[in-house]
Length: 433
Ligand SMILES: Cc1cc2nc3c(=O)[nH]c(=O)nc-3n(C[C@H](O)[C@H](O)[C@H](O)COP(=O)(O)OP(=O)(O)OC[C@H]3O[C@@H](n4cnc5c(N)ncnc54)[C@H](O)[C@@H]3O)c2cc1C
Image (cartoon, rainbow, N blue to C red; front, side, top):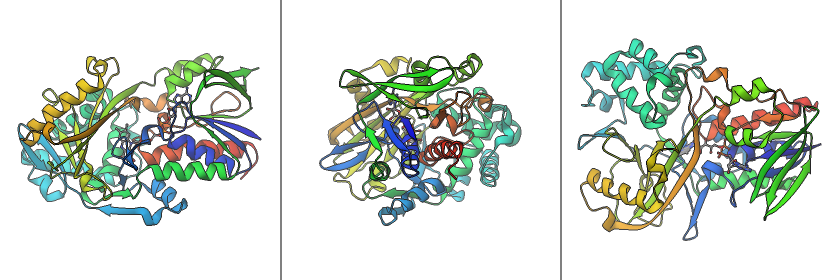
């Protein structure tokens, strides 16, 4: 039994580790030179630093199970951290029910209604019942116009998209899940998310699985409607692997690019899955300037970013007083995306100086910019109609990755789970239980 797993992010690594531990000859192909995908890390001054913040949410049981399953439990620690919103020159704490009640940018009634909506969201794991309903329609009716102002901001910040084109099922699932960390605590691993990537890779290779980096998949070839071969480029040469089983965790537009012969209706349905991009700068400073771990920027028209994460409050292994992650979600067709890395970081720095009322550029030690073209699927109100099943209609083709997390948000746990689910269905189809 041979399986080829496409993509070396968390989902692909999980799928490959499950398959290789269940008797499959497993080959994972990753186009980049390093593993981890959206959860990959920089190696700077001998330490792995996540390319984007990557905290563990306290309700993320799949990531926690993975951490303990890999024997990394003793590396995990928790912190109660400050979360805030910045609006019109002022920062507001948002870390506890009491601070939410004092949140000035909303009227008292708006704050109460917002709090009640979050409380409601927490009572359920899945909000599938809201399939087809937009954030705008649901939240205006359930929480009123005033609370909707804040909700609309949260949606715009995450998707750069109007709330009438985003799913209420996604929003409520996210509120339910994320708000637990905001009011309770955030987790982090000594050694960062790289330890999970490394642990999964070792679990896969220990049983003979091959994990290839710098191996870009160029074609999945079907024969008589069934998976037959995978072609990939490695060191400028085309290579091929014969296989009847492929688990793809590639972003959907990438998968559609490399596979010919999908049933037309299936292809058309998958073409509805759009992605948003993100630009996340890691900026090390000689001094910490933010009292918040996570500061949301509400003035979206005035600032070129939507969130600032001060890792100094979370990451105990930093060699620098401050490491800020500054993030923006956008379309990769936007003018801002076309700017050079340096220009983007310069704009970030000058606006950070404005937020923190000091010359942030003067404290700069180093910076990196991470561009993720396929950062998150855009979860439109009827996304469920287009979301692929783990088992595709093509014999031998299975799907994992962040196109399959809905209605839950895409975070480490949901990505890992999609990889696990796809692998388990492969096993079931081969009579392995
Ligand atoms: C800015 C940002 C911050 C985040 N912060 C957090 C956080 O704090 N906590 C949390 O839990 N989650 C966080 N996440 C989410 C988390 O990173 C993702 O949910 C998870 O890493 C997705 O894994 P994946 O394997 O499904 O997708 P990906 O990581 O996208 O993996 C897909 C892989 O396929 C590869 N690929 C693409 N095309 C080809 C090809 N042709 N051939 C071979 N390989 C190919 C890509 O290079 C990539 O490695 C964050 C994400 C972002 C973008």
